[in-house]
Amino acid sequence: MKKGIITVLGKDQVGIIAKVCTLLLQYNVNVLDISQTVLDGYFHMIMVVDLTNQTENTNLHTALNELGETLGLEMRLQLAEIFDAMHHI
Amino acid sequence: MITRNEIMETNRMIKEANLDVRTITMGISLLDCADADVDKFNENIYRKITTYAKDLVKVGDELAEEYGIPVVNKRISVTPIAIAAAGCQTDSYVSIAQTLDRAAKDVGVNFIGGFSALVHKGMTPSDKILIDSIPEALAVTERVCASVNVGTSRNGLNMDAVKKMGEIIRQTAEASKDNGCIGCAKLVVFCNAVEDNPFMAGAFHGVGEGDAAINVGVSGPGVVKKALEEVRGADFETLCETVKRTAFKITRVGQLVAQAAAKELGVPFGIIDLSLAPTPAVGDSIAEIFQEMGLEEPGAPGTTAALAMLNDNVKKGGVMASSYVGGLSGAFIPVSEDHGMIEAVEKGALTLEKLEAMTCVCSVGLDMIAVPGDTSAATLSGIIADEAAIGMINSKTTAVRIIPVIGKQIGDDVEFGGLLGHAPIMPVNGYSCEKFIARGGRIPAPIHSFKN
Image 1 (cartoon, rainbow over the protein chains, first blue to last red):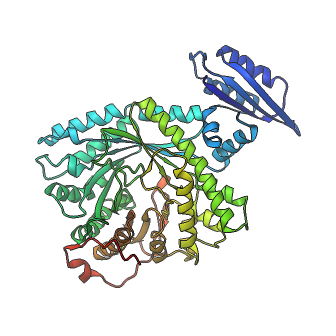
Image 2: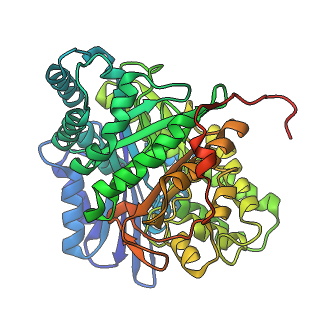
Image 3: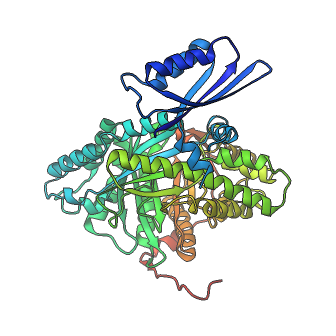
């Protein structure tokens, strides 16, 4: 499985998860797990996704960055391997 | 299972502490490009470099995006040209440097290293042509880096080459004097040069290497500094453990990216270079690590001990994290590329002599140091000889990258731009070593017993 981690950071607002998930649907990306906290109106979400069957017509990284910019949030997608490599032997 | 804290820690390192992969360097052998006709040789090397490295920049950028970590530089190192071009019937290798520059430009890498000669015991006619071509080659090209190895622990020091390199550094400065003498920033004189170093300006692809290899340099002085902030005031055991743990994490990322790059490019993975390489940016500085350790300024008494400890623990942590470690592997202390070092020089805290002492315990040597424009060739050779002697006796790599800035004096400053930063002109001991350097010949190989 090609596992990815999406992190979203910024001011809380209506529909963040819905918008991210809609985008992921367009790319055929499956959501495996979501964990989110809101502290003092500050939204922080970590999403584990399966990129194995992702359709590659356009770049999902760019699409996520663009969505982040429209919503005023910081959004990034990274392969999970980098966290595994750094923290797990 | 990856935890929220782990994700946050990694991303904090990248975003707030400037963690990055400093360079993916592709080593390419040019031994099979030999030809008696220099034009044909140039054609062969251009074709080989642009074929192997055509996707280097693209793959580097893609990996940066996929893993969410900057891959700052994509670079190329080649077989020392003095070896690869030895069969060419020509009296100048400037056209070869221009071909390397064109190949680098066309594949989009910012530096190409290997305009080099290994002359630790003697010089072939080809070595002589290469060395004589250096001043012009570095003035007419933008991305080519040159290096010359003048000594090894096994062979001693070639003092004829040391003398020659003092003169060549002066000529290189003269040839690029309208441009801040930048030629000298692309020229390194080594003792015990390594064959798989991914860092510029001293990278070349050794003759013991395969046809091509991917070597990766990781970095992260900022990450070490942040980690040390958490243990402020703790004892040395805690300090060392923190550096080791941090170096381990940084290196694991380098290993991951190196293996992915090697796979994508279809080129074998060579080594990870465990070096802490600063940049002029605030928060990406070796000097700041010293300050966090408790030194008011780099150069204060205790600096050599602090550097020795830092260097050793980066290695101890990093070696465990990578399957192959090589290159220079140590903390770099270039003056112009570290804002904290620059400030320490400006305040008078850090001198050339203290820097020399520091190079006894770290990689690599006197690096990116600007000296007055009227510094004589013999004095430059004397500085090279001192640094090479440290490397020879202690079986380590040492190097000199020194810039006599034509027309500038102590108190002036020179700007190189970009990663090379700017440097205050440092004072040099004014007493002469001319008669010593003029002797010529070789210093024999040192004895490797009775260490004291």
